Length: 250
Ligand SMILES: Nc1ncnc2c1ncn2[C@@H]1O[C@H](COP(=O)(O)OP(=O)(O)OP(=O)(O)O)[C@@H](O)[C@H]1O
Ligand SMILES: [Mg+2]
Image (cartoon, helix red, strand yellow):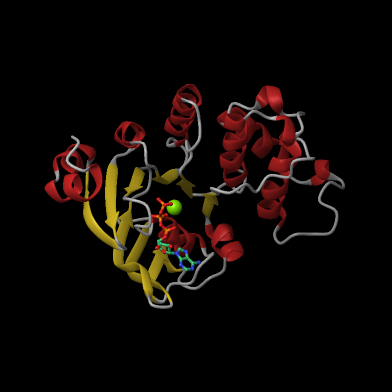
């Protein structure tokens, strides 16, 4: 089976700094892929190139057999890649449901129209998407709560929900458990585990317990390059990984 996503030798330079250096990556449909590496390794920059926020300096990206290199974020989202953000995208004064409706509508109705909340009942599929996202992110009981009144962990789950609301085929999660309590983190990992049944996932994550629990494949980056790749048991034992990332701790 061909890969769903294929990045071929992509590079991103910021002036004299090479944040991502000739990196290639293949992601198969239905898998959970973890991207790990120390601070500054280039993980978020790679994600931004996949989601269309940044244009690669060189290299090519293919998604579902079509080239997507250089397309903007809206177009890439329309084709089925959605990213959950490290920084917040939530409208604090809207309810949880209203927040989810915005990206859901953008996908269902195409590019944004004037008044997003007018005649919502007329939009086919919206209620299903909303209910599905609330359920998937365990936010059903918070549907009518103002986003500003959510607990931290709930806000982070809503951020994932916003990405899910565009009904992606490939979901990019940048540190979904960052800043969460151990309890919240556990719950989120469970939810992501459930998601894998319906969407292919790449997750950037620093917590190695989370990585080893979730991932089918792990890609290790260091200073912009891919230094290792494979199933968790192989990565755990990889000398270059222990040296560069785990500090020999395992
Ligand atoms: N917009 C930018 N302009 C200039 N340099 C940037 C920009 N974005 C990232 N960088 C640099 O590129 C390198 C890679 O950054 P990136 O954010 O991709 O790392 P990361 O692996 O996500 O790190 P972290 O684990 O800390 O989130 C870093 O040296 C960073 O300072
Ligand atoms: Mg980052």
